[in-house]
Image (cartoon, rainbow, N blue to C red):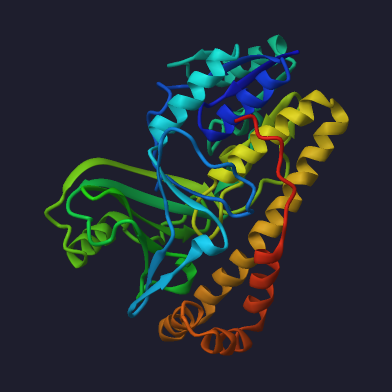
Length: 371
């Protein structure tokens, strides 16, 4: 079997490693150098409790998140799910090095066009498109609009400044004055170390041509002033989109969508590293099983996404329907150190209590990770 993989992000690299483990011949195509062009908070949130601890590139585990509403509330997320702060460039370069040592042929600075993809369909048995959203496959098969029905619009800066007071925690702060139509909307500060941090923000947008959207660059300037970071040095900047729902169809002839290209990002926070890695591994299992595996690939991902999204959907509904003072009260209640206060809050929000207990209690089968 000959397998082509488009994109050397987490999904593409995990797929390449999984294929090499099965002795499948793999060509991996990356439009830049491996580890370049990353616009991401660089946290892995192991939302389903299935990820192995990263190797090189791991900066530290994150034990606590500071959630800001009207006030600051600290939530010990690591008690329930793992969260790791990464240097994704180093992590992905290490994964690529391991893949190459196992026989994967990596082609850097190779941008795949529609014509190139059509030719590749004749030369390879299967192609895994892990090239992000909107995918080159969507351009070839004319479904790019599926990514923009509802999506998260993000803008991020990498800043040099003093982040020692926040370390080793991270911060997520919610906007008090943005209409519900843009929710979820918030900004984050993710320190990579005491002197560098990823500072970004997202909001929800409906419709590719919608002009009704916040000016994220202006909002960013307001955030930097409020956080005392107006004089921080901007090292990098970037923007991007993440679709808010899994695409209705993931297999197009002999092409399989993986990760962001499949719409596997979170509608709440835009993260998708864990699902990208998982989908890469599941896609390789699917191609090794032929057409039977193809149907199983989509169904397996639907089940994973259903469990992953249950609590996120309730949270998003709260952000869109509660006043900001009510949402602040919810944050205060769920982060309280008092079990009585947390229970009292849960009884006022029974749908959130139920989905939280189910989510934390779910034990998923851990895939046969290639690293």
